[in-house]
Image 1 (cartoon, rainbow, N blue to C red):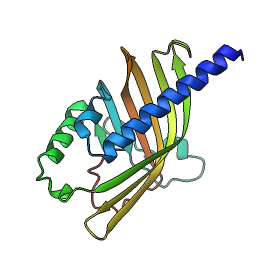
Image 2: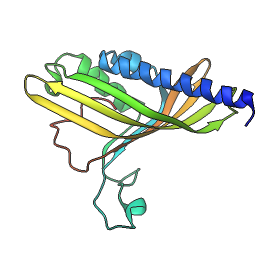
Image 3: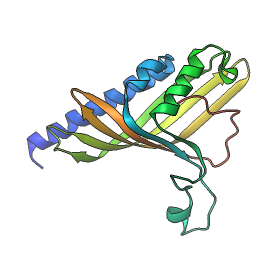
Image 4: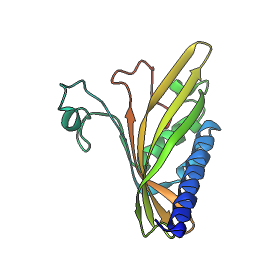
Length: 181
């Protein structure tokens, strides 16, 4: 691999990391309207359910299918915007008082690049996450998993056009999923 390509890979990975760290900050600071600006108009935001399946069939059957299958979340920009608007009313029953949340994003890899490493037009990424949520005095939830994101460049900015969240649990003990991954 040429030195220029190696440098371009490093710079792009750093740029995408900074994008995801900024996104985590926006969510943790409850700046949801600004977070919505990071999303592409055609976003598909999907959290499939996981099933316990026999060894050897997990690749085919562990995740519930998209488009018509049962999932924890399967949304586009309209419903994500409605969720943000509902939280921002201040009378959202599941977020009153507001949760305290910390998003940790790690192990980022850029898995696919369109347009070349130096002037990419789209990227696919994989990462791991840990989300800590505390509500009222005693409710504490941890969410751990993997995320697959597709980003497209619009002007000088990246936009998330696809997000797939794989939770490393198939039974959720949390009372709700009102936050964003």
